[in-house]
Amino acid sequence: MEIKNICCIGAGYVGGPTMAIIAQKCPSINVTVVDINEKRIAAWNDEDLSKLPVYEPGLDKVVADARGRNLFFSTEVDKAIDKADMVFISVNTPTKTYGKGKGMAADLKYIELCARQIARVATTDKIVVEKSTLPVRTASAIKSILDNTGNGSNAKFQILSNPEFLAEGTAVTDLLDPDRVLIGGDTSTEEGKEAIQALVSVYANWVPQNQILTTNVWSSELSKLTANAFLAQRVSSINSLSELCEKTEADVDEVARAIGMDSRIGPKFLKSSVGFGGSCFQKDILNLVYIAKSYGLVEVADYWEQVIIMNDHQKRRFAHNIISTLFNTVSGKKIAFLGWAFKKDTNDTRESAAIYVADELLNEQSNISAYDPKVQAEQMYADLDYLNTRSSEENRNGLTAFDNAYDACKDAHAIAVLTEWDEFTTYDWQKIYDGMQKPAFLFDGRDVLDTKKLEEIGFVCYTIGKGM
Ligand SMILES: NC(=O)c1ccc[n+]([C@@H]2O[C@H](COP(=O)([O-])OP(=O)(O)OC[C@H]3O[C@@H](n4cnc5c(N)ncnc54)[C@H](O)[C@@H]3O)[C@@H](O)[C@H]2O)c1
Ligand SMILES: O=c1ccn([C@@H]2O[C@H](COP(=O)(O)OP(=O)(O)O[C@H]3O[C@H](CO)[C@@H](O)[C@H](O)[C@H]3O)[C@@H](O)[C@H]2O)c(=O)[nH]1
Image 1: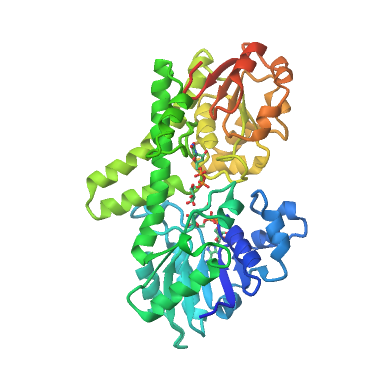
Image 2 (image 1 turned 60 degrees about the vertical axis):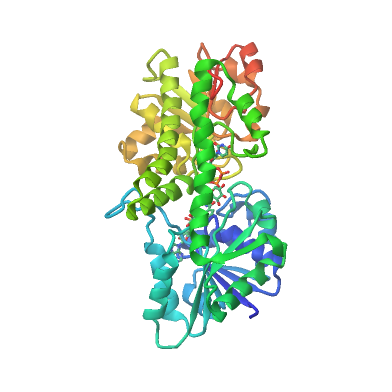
């Protein structure tokens, strides 16, 4: 079966970049990305490519190549669904904030709405692809909705799981050259196998066949949660040892290098940090923990929950270290934050460690001055407000955002590096030092700065996993 029209529901960090690459690599397929968020769609359609709603290196060029040719962004959801042979569901699946499973389970209401909408408008057969990260066995719920809430048109549906493994900040290169593409489907029927092959053919336009892995649908769904759990576990593992390194004068980078050269361990995801953030790791592990618990697998659930407990500890201990180093009080003191995004090269701030460190410091009445190359003040306030720790007004009084690092650091008692943006290494650190209160403390939560040089200038430095 040849795919001619693709619709993707959800024009976010996954739907936008993923579909832009499919459109660029498959000029014969029309790709329409739809969303109910009108502002977001308008931004995807903006002539000025610097205004795209997702910042990813190289994405502007891909969008410029394909947009208007075979890549379209629209709010006309029904129309795009009905026209498509293949519908990707790429909507958000956040942690539930209410009811049963609150704070753990994935909230699948947006997924269900999509399934009902597809069933309502479809007049022809469709392959429905789960691109969102979903709990294992969600495909059966989607199938049940599609098969039982139809509009009488006799349209038939095949469900595939095709989880996305791109990381933000490197989305374009990850999509162009993925380690693997995973496609799960119903391998027990001819129609199921045909649907799998149809999606394989789309990716085969640029991904080598031996890197396109096909499995049953449950393995595919569970592999996504498992991959994120393993990756986050490595970060929590090295972060747990960063604390021990600080006590023992071992250097966490040297330890990471030494163990990473063991080919059985490997060098990636061993960079100690102020804690992992991003929209996926915490959400997906909590979801895994919830699923394990729901099957009564207490030991399995406890094992993975520890990854989150360690991460929360790492964020908190970074903040507490700032407080204790600044003579046990930060009340009324200005702390400059360099970085707010959860990692470099993205404007995404979801679950960023910076938010939690700021929250701890605001509890101690410090004044935060923040600068991030890609994050605006309103986003920072929204992130703090979302925690519900204090009033919105208090957050606005406690944090001031600046559009450059020099102003943010002026008169500060301390600087905290929360994101590893490359530009931080290029600053005139003598100038920054001259403008600060003394002693001028610097807390590098990402180990990006040359602390030796900074100490020669006069800074008192702490680096995660290396200590003072
Ligand atoms: N962000 C990542 O790096 C990443 C990577 C891999 C997988 N994922 C998974 O992909 C999914 C999407 O993540 P994201 O970061 O792109 O989320 P996002 O919040 O950036 O985008 C989701 C979009 O879906 C839209 N939407 C919700 N319900 C809709 C509906 N009924 N009709 C039309 N549009 C609707 C929202 O308006 C939003 O714009 C999640 O399940 C996530 O876990 C994310
Ligand atoms: O050695 C490391 C690697 C990462 N991090 C932190 O971990 C978080 C997540 O980073 P990363 O995984 O690079 O970015 P994400 O965009 O969250 O990507 C993850 O989550 C996505 C959503 O599911 C998956 O698709 C990706 O494969 C998976 O890497 C960030 O705060 C990083 O700073 C570290 O602290 N140390």
